[in-house]
Image 1 (tube, rainbow, N blue to C red):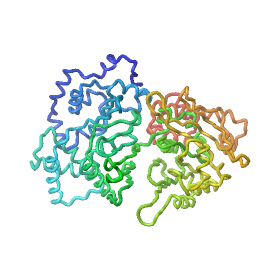
Image 2 (tube, one colour):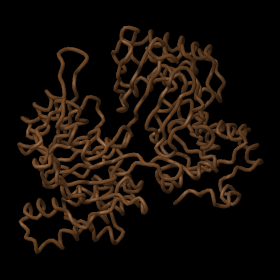
Image 3 (cartoon, rainbow, N blue to C red):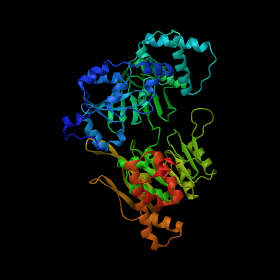
Length: 586
């Protein structure tokens, strides 16, 4: 399904999602019946623990009256979607956002209102009414007293949340807390977020479609949305509040944040990377921070195919080459999507492979059971660098070594690993093959030029402008053949090249590596070439079908397992019949 574009009949489209005035009146006077009261008393957060998110705007308003109040207050006629990733292409969504007020739900009764246009697009958060500071302090005093009267052990955030919810309900039942019945769940929601979570930051962390969250100092919170690009939120924060929350979060994760230690990096439990610059002497608008988010479930190759980041043929090509062990760097500039593509492509590696990942900040997310995940230690105790971990990885007999990013002397060890038969996958900051070659062979990496051809593939990805927004695209896939010492350059073959007119990564029709590596690996002669390329096409059609019908990472992973079990042709024939029972089998 595609979202309507600016050329559509807005009146007709909005008629399908518009909330009538009479419906507003009914909903604004809506009160929960006795069953809902009982449910709220039992769980405290019943309103916000939805297993199934509202499918329609009417259903969302019925469950959450404050959504109706917001819509009425701002006099909007919203277009309601439950999953932005399934509603057409990125261009469709961006175009629609210029003429429609788009609303989509998050967890726990939070809704996001997107409106593009103007100086910068808007990212408005719709959530339950927040109680006053006096009410929150009262709740804290009562619950703190109950905790002091009992022996309570709660380690995880989920356990702490359950304990506090139980104590909150107990305090209400004993009339130690006198709170409006219809607001209790709302107040508990805000109390938990402030005392156990990360305050207002948790709202942004709950949105799986945000890539970056930033506060440049006192003022508004800004986000970068996967589909709608840079946006300004309706959350505004004071300078002293920024300092308070940053100190609080730093202490929680064992960091000291002060004017003598003003810059820190924190790895949040959900995998997000939190960078803090503290103090107005080095940040003139006040302390600032940026959170780089990573989705709870990894983005799959099927997602990236659907978003046109690369083609199904390219994903099938990588799927086949991963069988024989290839070394590849995904290259590009900052924010070009290198790590996302690396994560997605590693989901095509055989499920029984042993993989060692080495990173400074954990970003790689694999489904493989035999996965050794290692991170550097740079700020406490004896230093353990990526160089050290890479040397150790060579003694662990991995099928693949994944390096989060190659920037320094660890590049030498990576190429030593390649030379000794250990395939290496990594990301690298370089916009073209010549820049890649120069950076690899210059300080501080200093890889000998004659070793560069150990790298099989150089994949270049970048952000490009198409229409109204920036999109991420793989622009070329280069098979590195050899180094020519005569003219000091690399001999390479571009197996895939981006076609800007069609907005598609096109296969050139042949591949040196498919023929030179897959054929001998399988004991095939050149007479099997038609069969080889037919298999490439079958795999591409399997992945294309997943991108259209079930793009989730788990669906792709289950398909990889099933293909290993019964073979490509069997899976292909079932996909053509519209049958994919393995999606829920493993």
